[in-house]
Amino acid sequence: MCPVSSKIGNVKLCAGCKVIGYIGKDEQKEDWSSHKKLCKVLQEARGKTEHWTCNGLSADDLIDRMAAKLERRVTQFETDIAMHPKICMVCGSGDRQAALKECRNCFCVAFCPDHYDEGGKFHKAEDCSALKTAAEDYKHEITLGHQVQTYSPAVMKKYEPLPQDIDMFFREDVNGLVSNKLPGYQESELRYITFLYTCPLTVLHALEQVGLKGGKKIEEATSLTVHLVGTRIAEMRHLHGWEVIACRYSSSSIVPLDIRSFIRFMLIPGCQGSPC
Image (cartoon, rainbow, N blue to C red; front, side, top):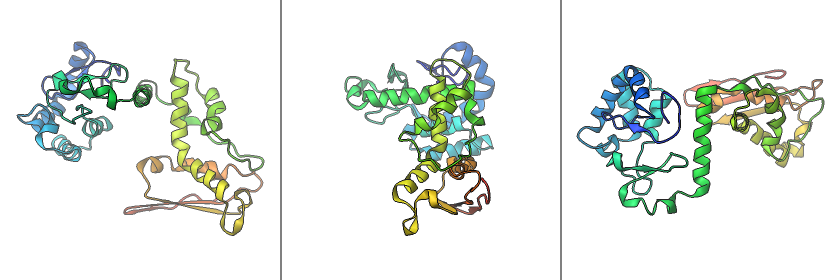
């Protein structure tokens, strides 16, 4: 994806770093003032080799180097170029960057000249489709943002079991929240909101299936404590999303919900009350 236009397609790599690609010369020229410092760091990282992955560096090594040389925290984009380098999907080599051929459908995987013919055996159609969808979702996020950020779960009049499909849980709300009719954007937003609420709704689904201690059903709960062990940044950023559990109960009998997140060096007490 071009970092300037956000267009997905066949990009031309910067001749200096051989990492960042642009859809055209105008985009490369526009980005030069922002790219030149990173370009120097990436050139130093690859040394005399064709690509930084050929110089004995790991993704973490490159991230640490970028942070040190740029004297700041790396951006998500910079993290991505370290974690997802353009290398041959078959042999893992980053050599001969100019000769690497990308999949013309998803533009997310590449093959070196030695593995052009057998690339299709490794890059399955279903994987290609999923990668294309992920790339398009990312493009929508960068260019359009998210209209479902205003979503707030409604407090139920009585406890209702979850639908069989998480998409069914959000589809009506997404239809109402998303006004942009760009093809594919509404489905992209549906995928985004289901990602945000996957963890709390998975916990709630599990509670519906197995019940609570003593054989009680989830709808009979008078209080609930959820411990998030091994929490990722994604859960921390959307901690308020766990209110969806409390909101499944009636407004006249809100269940006190205590969300406690245990991660290294940090204890975040959750909300107490109605709803968190």
